[in-house]
Image 1: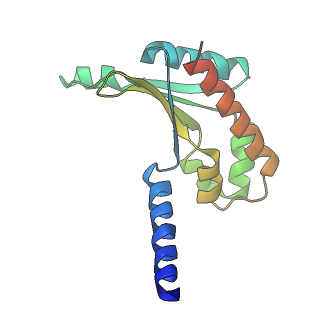
Image 2: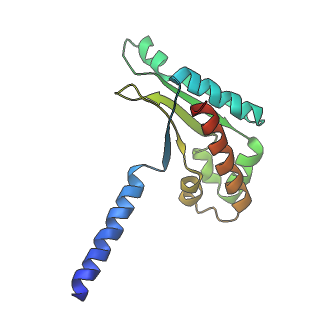
Length: 152
């Protein structure tokens, strides 16, 4: 009986770990708007908070330029050099994931989503444990921007 419980515990742990990795650290939120409006609203909320929009990439437009078809997909690259630098002083490799990104996209069923990396994922990926106030601030700001982008 003890062996069965141990095996079951290992299986449950494996299943939970696999499920957590399956999302790749992404937060995916449904939007009540089309891709363009979702992205516009996200940009407006980020800019209102004083963040810099470094780039906005329309992947569908890029695909059209090479005569390919892609559902509406827009990437927003944004951030704060002050906050990003704080994270990179903890682990400079965090720069591979910075500036932050948000993706407004339409799935095969026509539903629009907003996706972004979970701050938990970013901090865990680089073992950043010395910036709890920064993590809290980033988490709250992203949730605020996402809500502004996806909900009326």
